[in-house]
Image 1 (spheres, one colour):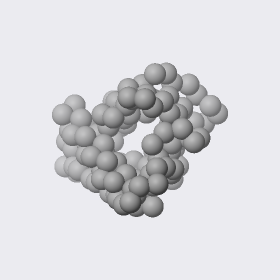
Image 2 (image 1 turned 90 degrees about the vertical axis):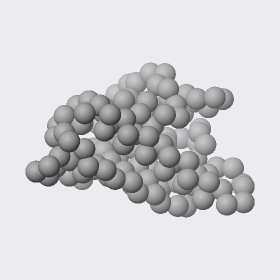
Image 3 (image 1 turned 180 degrees about the vertical axis):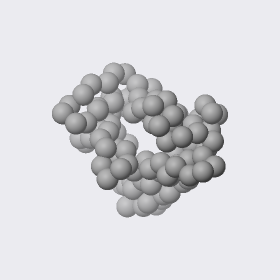
Length: 134
């Protein structure tokens, strides 16, 4: 398993960012999948996303002042994927940090390294989309 972290300061409040980037918008901003549908399951939001030949549920919930999400079930490209999205509001904007742990479900040499590289690109695209929105 590999962990990746990306962060960026954006000229917006944490409330503005979290209201503009709800779970479906985060999935779209990452750029690898489109949203098929969304439903609530207790305190969680399930976003069913699809891409070329893949359909997977992502479970979003709030934990410890952060938005936490994970690939649910055994569908999807990862054996394990979990991500924490944190907003740290400051005087000059908000510092956004994504932390994600991933492992690839396919038995490839350096598979976890490839998964981390791909995941880092998705998270950087999400930060770029957030910055562009403000």
